[in-house]
Amino acid sequence: MPVKLEDILQISPYSLKREEKEKLLTGRLRELTEHHRRSCPEYDRILEALSYHEEDVRTYADIPFLPVRLFKEIPLKSVPDEEVVKTMTSSGTSGQGVSKIYLDRETASAQQKTLVKIVSNFTGSSRMPMIILDCPSVIKDRAMFSARGAGILGFSIFGSKKIYAFDDNMELDVEVISKFLETFKGQRILLFGFTFMIWQYFYKKLLELKKSGVHIDLSNGVLIHGGGWKKLVNEAVSPEEFHDRLREVCGLNSVHDYYGMVEQTGCIYMQCEEGHLHASVFSDILVRRASDFSECGTGERGLIQAVSVLPGSYPGHSLITEDEGEILGEDDCPCGRLGKYFRIHGRIKGAEIRGCSDTYERR
Image 1 (cartoon, rainbow, N blue to C red):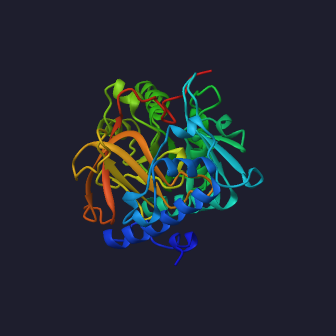
Image 2 (image 1 turned 120 degrees about the horizontal axis):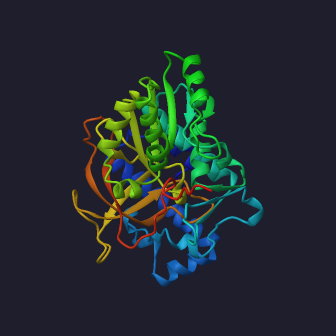
Image 3 (image 1 turned 90 degrees about the horizontal axis):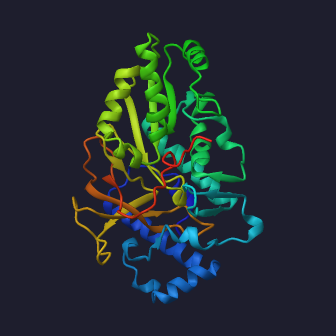
């Protein structure tokens, strides 16, 4: 019996134990594999080359994965051109190719609904006044989204009233922020941005201001950030120090990192109060050894494979990334959320820098 996406989206994000989730994902991902095989000739040829047979699939771990880099090399879509309503592009530094992800209306809608369900589990269902830690020009082209622009637009739905913290020259607009905080004094404030840019352009500016006697109080703030730690590693800044320094400079206590990729937008992996990244019922990760792609055990480092129930317009439902990580446990995180929880250690050696915030260059 087909596993309908609309039924999956009704499930609470962290409510299924391992056996139930495995059954759900296996059914849905088998169906997606056959759908993309019928609808995407390039994907069909890949499965032929791999001698894939649906009857050999016992669990979703048996479904072939594509390297995320492949989306930089060839266009992969499973819908006619006239049904593509949005093309999203990955981050890429100068001279690098970018992934192009083709979305039809159903897939784009499912991505938004999934993001809302996941994030609301951490922030609550009420929308909050929101400070976007970026500049307005990022989302100018609504048809051709960068990963950065898509992230901003996706998270903007959680804001009741929104401002941008920076002008288009990435200069912090202290006056606008101060007026905004005064208007919504005593209320919870949502902040969203990309990790390196928050550190480079927000934290360092707040530190300058504090030294000059100007203090911006964000003790009622909830920060959600993502987009890669590569440049912060180069600056020797750990996630713990990132959180501690923000707390010191502006009183920000509630900070949630997330892991995600433009190739599987919507299915982000949010960081819980215990500091763990969590897989929801809409997606999962496996960790594989680079030597032979066999599955790693709990606590063993390897390449992250990400699966998602959402991609209907392109064959992005099972991908091997260029990120190294480890599974810490399943169904037993002290935060109470069911599912796998894990840690990302960074990019494998030789992989491109491609985090949303890692690629910002002052124009």
